[in-house]
Image (tube, rainbow, N blue to C red; front, side, top):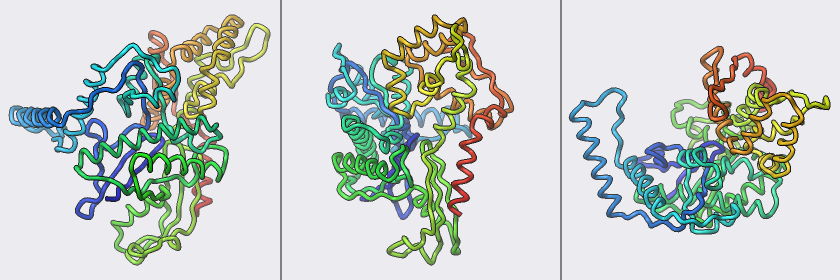
Length: 427
């Protein structure tokens, strides 16, 4: 059976056709979106497999409890009844977590690759984010691996990311097969017009090779790639009753793509749709870049950005850009290096501005992910509010950063202009 897979920068989804309609499969907590991240927890070696008998027992119990709650209190407007697929997905996650707790040891992997190649249990999605936030030192956290696939990375790094993609695809495939009771060996994977990175077409080729290799290794036999804006156009086409020429804008977490395409009843059954695609363009720019820019321009000044050293020189801006660019593997490696740690400690002694201590805390306590999530939260809330007080109490007690919508607009104005130019270029 063919499945359609959105292997996204921020989230992943997978769907199958059921009764001629696309159906998304629940992947985490009954939700159809899986956050594109994983956590390799130290000291968890080869947990037991989830027992089918125990799973069935728990699902029946959850279903019975849900029915009792509805019968006793009545179904409120906000209460959603979980279907069998969602209950299986939720219970499987609970059992995996229990088995992982029972399999903990004192062993500790020395590198990401060592952890990936061991029998360690891999945690995915929101659970991975929570595991990292609660104890950053307890394992290896990787967010948005798709962002790195087109970058200029070494052979060793390519091996790491191929294995990471393999782990994520294996989880998505296995969860889909288990929940839906089917075997998947064919998949159409969405791809951006251009992957994130500075290698141009070479980066695109590299990224597709990594994904293709990983997909084959997890058991997919027939693998096709479809540009994401074109895939979005085909879904929109199902509701059209007349032919149209449509501009499709796909603004994702790491890339933004546009396509002009002929859609409608006259085109939908054509064996080849190449002639229907009039133009397309893509930019290695997405929602994460907006979060990073807001963090740099509006949050980093509260962490010592623009402060001066006692010798009159400014603190290098690269320290702050490295801190916020969580989707840049080289920037993150440099920021977490011992050299940067020593440099930051020296700068803290060379300035009277105590705000720089917050940047040191951010690095030493590995709080970059939480800061990125805070920047995203600010971006979201400023879409409906003129001003917000952004809580950063995980850095310092009673620490709030005041941000206005005008500051957000100023911070991301260059990126918004690039979005506008991309749309104009497609037209």
